[in-house]
Amino acid sequence: MSFREKEQLCEMAFSGCGPLWHLCTDGNAQSIIFIDDAELKVGMNLFGVCVASAPGVKIYTFELMNNHLHSIAEGEEVAVRQFFESYKLKLQRYFSKSDRVVDLRGFECSLFRIENLQSLRNEIVYANRNGFLVKSDCTPYSYPWGANMCFYNLALKYLPSVPYKNLSVREKRKICHSNDVNIPDEGLMVFEGVLLPSSYCLIGEAEKFFRDAHHYFYLLTRNYEAYSEIAKRMHDSLFLTDDELYTAVSAICRKRYNISQPSLLPGKDKIELAKCMHNDYNASNRQIRSILKIQAELVDELFPRK
Image 1 (cartoon, rainbow, N blue to C red):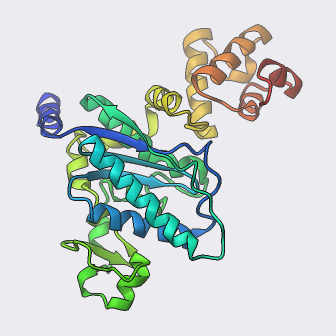
Image 2 (cartoon, rainbow, N blue to C red; image 1 turned 135 degrees about the vertical axis):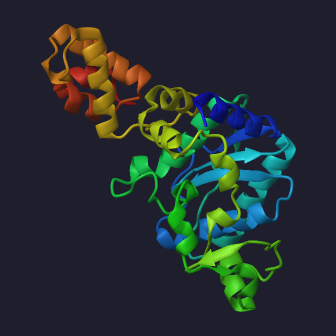
C-alpha cells in the first residue's frame, strides 16, 4: 500500500475510538511503591485483573514503574477513573497485608485527553519508553513491567503460556492476591505466574494507529520534540537517555552553529545551548556538564539545584 493508503487506514482506526486518555500518576509526588521485581510482578497482575474486570475501559498499553504508572486508555472519564481507583484499592489491600508500610496518598490519577491520531501515536510511544529511560540494561522492547514488549513482537506467540481459566484455584489466588478469583478470563493468558499484557491490552488495535513496524520504531527512537512536549505537560523529570540527548544536541549544533561536536562550541554558545537543554529537553545539570564540558560551578549557577 502507498503511504497515503496506510495513513487512511490509521485514521479510520482512530475515528472508531471512544474518548482516549493518557492516564498517569506523578512520580514526583509518590515515594517508592514497588521495591523489587517480586512486587512489580504483583503490580502487573493486579493491573491485569483490573483491566479484565472493567468492561467499560480498554487499555492499549501501559508501563508500570517503581513509583508511578503510564497507561493509554479508552472509555468515558468516569469509567477510567473508577478503573484506576479499583487498581489503587487492590494495591492498598495487598500492602496492608505485607510486612512493609506503603503510603499511596501520592498515587493519584491524572487524565490527559488525546484529541487526534498523531497525539495518540506520540502518547503510546511515550508510555512505552518509560522503563527504557531508567533501566540502562533494557530496550523499549525488553522492559518487563508493561505492554511495551508486546508491540510488533512476533515471538510472543511462541511463549509457553497457559490459559488463566485452566489454572487451579490456588494458582489463581497467587495471581489475584484474593480469594475472589472469578474474573472475566476469556483469552487471559499466564506466563511464569504473570498475566500476559498481550492477553488483556489491545495490542493489535494499538498497532493499527501506526503505518507499520518501521513507523512505530522511528517514533520510538527519534521523536525527541514530541517526548519533550509530553514530559512538560506531565512534569516528568526524564524523557531522554544520555545517548539520545547527545544525539539531539549534536543535531542542534549542526543546524545552529555548523559544528557537530557540542563541546567544541565557544563559551557564549555553550551557555545558550545549555539553556536550551535545560528548558526544552529537561536535561539535568550532570547531563549538561557531561555533553558541553562546562564546569560544574557554572552549570549550578545557571540552574540552581532545588
